Length: 188
Image (cartoon, rainbow, N blue to C red):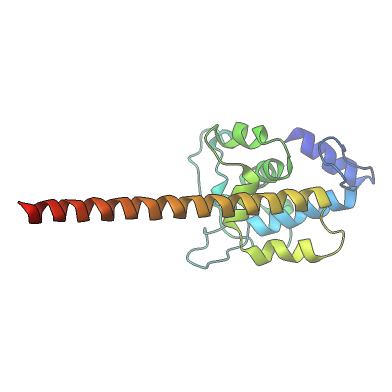
């Protein structure tokens, strides 16, 4: 997180971010990504409760020692990273760091070794159109980050298909077992 903060400060001063970490990303694109992701994570897309925001999928108790993980409320402001509580800002920064970092160990370090990649969590917990708006704006986000988002979408779609296929196979096997049991009962 400290390294991301340093890159944000460098981008604010007009310098190019570390190209090993943020490949083909300009300072303006990094600032846009951070600001847009913070806004996306704090929006309530489904309206059930005010705490039904994507940021709550990124719960990290280590960021708030002594506090139970708490649901954050949606933000009405334009810049939740600047206007939120300290705990919310820390959680936002951690989530943004894990989402933007191409190294998946960052997310696993923050959210646990069994957690799925943070970029997949981001894609699966946000409204697709919220991500499409900045992607469709020319040069708003870096091509490397857009490529990683598209890769996460493909991975999630593949996992969904595999899960559906496994469910269909399990249902077919159960159906065959039931038929076999019924047939053997008819013979007796």
